[in-house]
Length: 192
Ligand code: IMP
Image 1: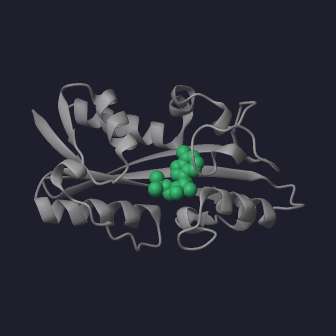
Image 2: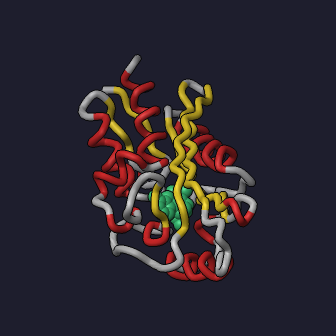
């Protein structure tokens, strides 16, 4: 069976994509390789970060692999926090800290437009390929819902009446940035 490494320490993401590809491809986790170190992620764009993570693992294990990077781009903030979404409120900050900072920065602003964007970099036989997904929506003025993670409680996707944190994982996955990018990657992998 073909094996591809997913260069992430997030177990949930690895399991989710394994379910989606079925039994044609084995998605190899970093855990199963005994790889515990943080992967360097110092790029200024989502694409650079995805490439950097995939290249680090590809060069180390010489096996096909992919990595993803996601950011929340808020129009009124000129696209911030973008690539810095995880550490928007500072190094080692919590999801709640990030949401508090976002709501504060947007306080009184009527332009609430934002989008999540995911870039996946696949390195296959040394060649890079990219897959992207985006989900447009608005930032609310308070938290709604308890599901999901990150900015989910304050993001309502376009055309929907509830936040990502009020939706089931399955419903979110149908329209989310990561769901879209992942389905493009899977479509490519299974087409071969
Ligand atoms: P990562 O590249 O998937 O690790 O995402 C970087 C950061 O973006 C996370 O730490 C979250 O703060 C935020 N983020 C990514 N995906 C989502 C999502 O689906 N919902 C809410 N926040 C997200």
